[in-house]
Length: 511
Ligand code: UN1
Image (cartoon, rainbow, N blue to C red; front, top):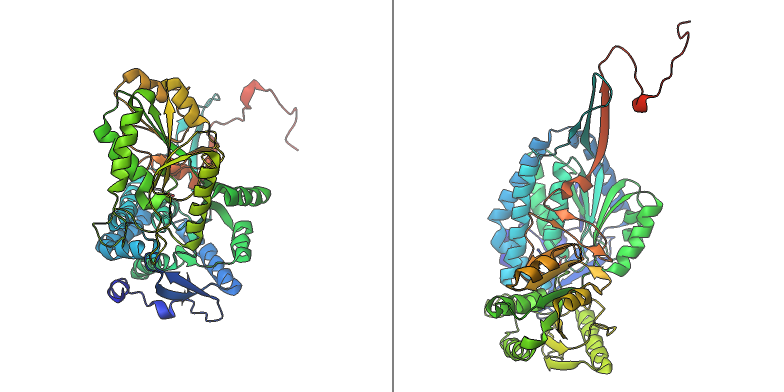
């Protein structure tokens, strides 16, 4: 642990949990937030929470930094993000280990998360030269019409514990190349990874004589988080978390007419028809359902299997589930680590009780593991789509298997969910896959063929429909959310003309 913290130049025992232009605010008046290792419940570090005064300083700095940053050419802003990407490359191993230590995902996934940040930095650097607006042909003679994109101001990022650093990178790098400054409130469950990333940004900012482009405050107090949400200086608020909290935040930001980007829950499904290659489907299902111990928003929670291959699938999956090695996520022989905390284990147990009460049939798992750390068994259940518990997003490794007869029925069941994030079909039947991808197919933001529901690449826009919140982050043209569109019309004629052919002439306009 000490080696990791030293490599990241992180001295946890005196790190204030917020950073502004004047440096780290080591405000011992702040409440202490304890970071624990979910695999053994040992304390990793204690950090001081931000106070209201700290928050105020941070917001002020970010607001002031925006004044100059917005006028720096976008490719030059990209250069700063490029340097952060380079620093992340150098720190990939240690930062990946810290992600694993603090949230308990497997080391492969911890490293993958840092890789996702690096990919995002590379993408943002290129995007910095491609903030394109289109030009239109005016209906009036000697008029030029086009649109251009301007920065917004301070972008607020509230991220969740499960992707403690990658989701920040999706938002922060794109926001920054667009000319915004970024204030980050990470989950109080993952303060150390956030501090490590802020340190990396600080070094790059210092090398470039910059301040306040990326800042951070950590709090576990609802009142301070709400202040942030309601702060009119936050031009765009990007929130990743539950639908319940997302709805509350959405209402608050709407009231002040702020912009919002929501990335909320998912109840993602994989459909497997009887033409599918099970050598592709089975590993994708198991990774999708148990990766990050079922705590991804893209986790596979429902599995629809065609009746003709149902018995075979159940036998194969039950066998596969018994092979999942559980334990210290830093040890690469373990495929699954713990849940984030004791409360998550309670939620898992509540879900298991609800499954039993509804008449679900537990085929594998179903219990919390009696050992230090917040481990639960990967759980496989035969269920019905209409069970209330199946309709709920339980952030745990529980997979519901449901039988179907016809592809149309499977698609309809898959769409019968309040969420609309990710979806997948395993099939070699071209009509089935085209149907799945058509307007009467999947209603989700992500639709995959022969790929699981999780593990999206950053190049596409990430997000989902319905109660997933409708936001799009990361690749494609998601950058447009971080800018304001301006339609420009320039008249270079020697007379004034009105659109729509309207005539308006003053008889005498000279005095
Ligand atoms: C999340 O769980 O909030 O597609 C993000 C995936 C990852 C991102 C998940 N690239 O599973």
